[in-house]
Length: 405
Image (cartoon, rainbow, N blue to C red):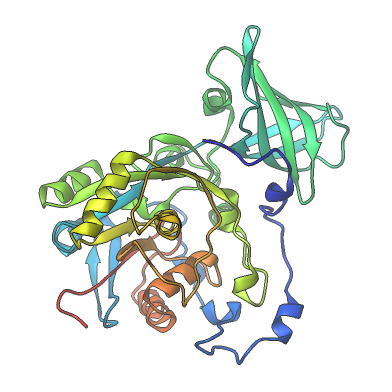
């Protein structure tokens, strides 16, 4: 896949520390909560701390599944392993097969100070073999680096070394990594790096006196994860097991795989009062010809296209907006598509998703798909029923009821 340049502007926008409020945008807003102009505050809800899932369910497909009918607001409660019977006949499920890399690294400056590094993405055209080893340039986010001169060496756990090539704002940087052997950085970080769990899981575990768990390497990963490159999991897919996938196909449904490498921007809060002013950081995706052909067939036959997660929605709807005469074609590129209430869905008909943070762009996408009031009412009921929320939590299936309006 290609990358659109080596500058740091895009990485600066990824910063976890971006805060503030767009007061200028707020001056021209219509009434709060109006259908024509929703504010970020309109996507807020209260969640008890005890419902934040800090560990995965003991069995993946034993998670609870909240069913919300898109064309009537009716709902019921199931378990995820019941999914094959809940899908409309001959549905096409589209999953994201990105693989989360152990992207969190620890280093030391020449002064001995500790630096935290989060890998974001490799720079196209900057990777290459050196004599007896390898070198790769990566966009990263750093904490504790301060301002240092280009060429400053950072000491990582062997067998990785790096120098600072460039620094931007809000922790953005480009590091030149090098090492021995032929596997490259993705191979060497398997022993040197940690899985980058979401900040809210890290904070909740720290409060409980816990840290990273050995199980995270397996469980913060879908069973069909294949293409390494994400720094966050496509969490709706965490509920699937090999047996469940086989049962879905045995029931006459189809499964297609696409890839979108989830970046750290997925955790960045919507800081503007008007969500339309929020900028999503571009994420790399690829849709193969096999997946595109499955999508074209499902569209031509009027079958349900079920997106497994918001990352799949954003990828497919990006393709839908680029499609020539409505035909989905194989594509590799990037997307920064922000979906808000009022936007049209051109490809996705049904959605499997986890429960998302208040006022997040992910919750806004789900509200765009099923309506703000029905979704927030479903969230309130899920809270009352004790559902587990966020990345390791339970799931929701938003579908169009057969025979409904």
